[in-house]
Length: 159
Image (cartoon, rainbow, N blue to C red; front, top):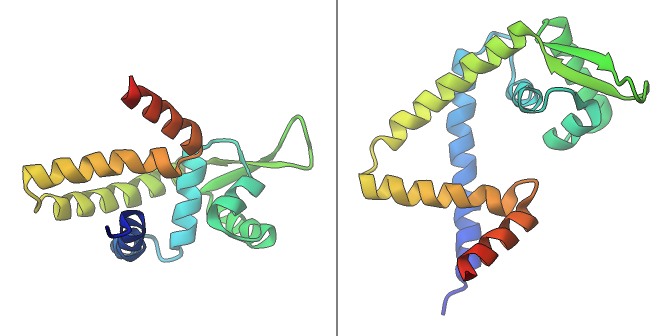
């Protein structure tokens, strides 16, 4: 029997960069001249996690703390992100989107979503249902609570 987990892993490794290329292209097309994909990802992360720390953002982006700090500095200068000290620990910096940052992110996000939706519309109803079910599973495997999510799902499926 073929090693199905390895085959699926290989397909993910081949497919995710293709999807990211399309998203990157759309973000570049819609972005302001100085808006990079890492900045888009930073805005997305902080938009989903208001008050996130600089360290959490650096970890999410896979950047060293000084590089993440420079990226944030650029977004602060463009008035897209605001920094504030943590009340509980003045050494920690917390991040929030400004109105302009939220608007820029929303515009780029909506454009990328619309482009992906136009590509996905080419699928049949059955193909779309299969893809949707598979995509619903991925956060259970890779999300922040992936271990407990899978345990809950396995327990639920066994009942």
